Length: 136
Image (cartoon, rainbow, N blue to C red; front, side, top):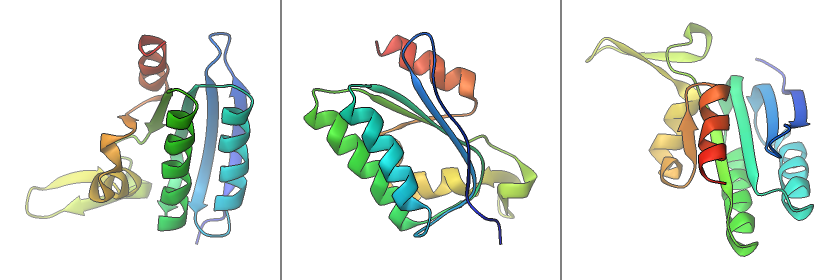
């Protein structure tokens, strides 16, 4: 089991909020995630990056927080939420024997739930920041 932890909560010079976290983002961690995401949206931030590169697990409660953030962005007139979920990281990956490929479990949750249609899934923080810059 891997505890939840925040790595950083910063705003770039381009006014993009980057929240980086690791470990297990579950029922116990979701209130912290919600407070930070919603707090930034309430303060007027409209371009957000959720860096889950070091996350090993995400549950339905945390997915609900992401959906809530998307809803708040839409109610506030729009915005961008990019999520960093790299592929192929062995410590957070699952191997698909039928195709002999490796996929990220956190990314898989976004795809299975259909949430990848509402957020931009990126393989790196740089890609996510570029997505937010394009959306400006």
